[in-house]
Amino acid sequence: MRLGLRLFLGFFLVAGLSAFILLRVVLGEFKPSVREVMEDMMVDTANLVAALARDELQAMPPGGTLVGTPFARRVKEYAERPINARILSASKRTLDFRIYVTDANGRVVLDTSPSPAVGQDYSGWNDVARTLRGEYGARTSPEQLTPYGNAGDLGNGKDAQGSPIMYVAAPVRADGRTIGVVTVAKPAAAVQQIIYRAERRIWIAGLSLLAVSLAVGVAVTAWMITTVRRLRGYAQDVQLGERRPPPKVPGELGDLAQAMDAMRERLDGRERLEHMARALTHELKSPLAALRGAGELLQDDLGAADRQRFAAQVVSQSERMTELVDRLLALSTLELRRGPEHPRRVGLVDAADEVIAQLGDRLEQQSLRVRWLRREDVTLQADAEMLALAISNLLTNAIDFAPAGSELHLSVGVEADADAGAGIAFLELRDHGPGVPAAAFTQLGERFFSTARPGSLRKGSGLGLAIVRQIAGLHRGELRFSPAEPGLRVRLVFPHFTVATQTSS
Image (cartoon, rainbow, N blue to C red; front, side):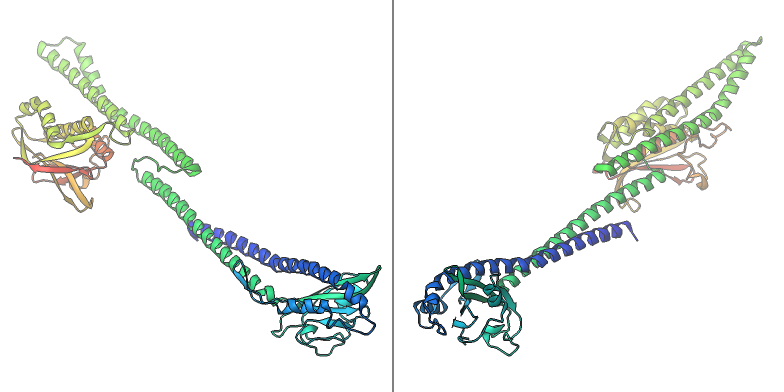
């Protein structure tokens, strides 16, 4: 299972279970709490009505009823009172309390029910029986049962719609004794709609919270996966040898990226040092041997011509070692950089003209001529010194391999490139020398890889093209090679930074 899916499923389980448990707890506590509040109000009402009924009940003759008394008329007026109350989102249009009064024996003496139970014995109901015993009397009757198991009417368990009815009783006391019981009844349906409405809102709020939590989980998971993929891409690029800065990531993952980059730098530095030491040792053997041989011969008595020849060899090999060390130091410096040090707008043609002027003496010595085949004004966002160094190394390499009296063909322009997928700027140089076998193209530009100079078995260090390749990479470009008949065609490509203006001859 992929990391992103595991993270999302884990977050979904935690958020989903938390929301489910929270909703179950809230909804499980909501109904009992509403009924507790409802019962608390009914207790107050029952005790208030009991206090109001005391005088009439105390004056009632044995076996009589309260029907027709002033108290009975007031209670009837309550039951018939019109009402239209807006309670928040609920609308109340009926008064739901049913009130009945029993005497000290549990006989009903007053009932506001549409089917009055006056005269019936309610002493078997919990609300009446417990109150007469001096206890708290209350009940909820879910079935239509009389105290003795017979089918009853509205007052004996359920309303017309079958809703459970809550009954709360209060004693009527006079002279320290209980002379009757007042019971207040209210159908649960009266508050059931309020409960349903509140439950629906709780469910909507809970599900909305869950949806928001899941959206946050998806966003966090996507951010985490994107960050991890950036780190993975960086690690894969490093594995392929590409040099680029670590991705900027906040938090611990950012620290991990920096640690990976520091570790890569240390490993690359150690590997470069070991490889450089081996290659430099190998490259220095030949000039050191030549210097030693020339030095030993100079210790003997030689003629002026021989002494001059061996002295020139000492100078030549010394210059060769100096050039090798200088180029190696330059390449090492470039390898430690991650991009152009001082980027600015540089004209590619102007940079090439400046380098050609600097190498004019060497071109003249070998009777070489630079011929422009294509000359477009192209502007690069580049480090001017690096760009000049790259062009200088390309020309120097071409001069070393070009036959005396030949031409070097130079082109600068902008064109579409299928490999880059966009427009590119290029500088292309072609010589008419012996060329390079196509099989060696992949190695050209590597340190200490070179082919023999024309008319000589001596090879160069290969550091010139290595420097050019490194500079191209720092500018997100590349160095390409293709065969020419005769010679070699070298193209320095700079994608993404080009601005072409016009073509000049």
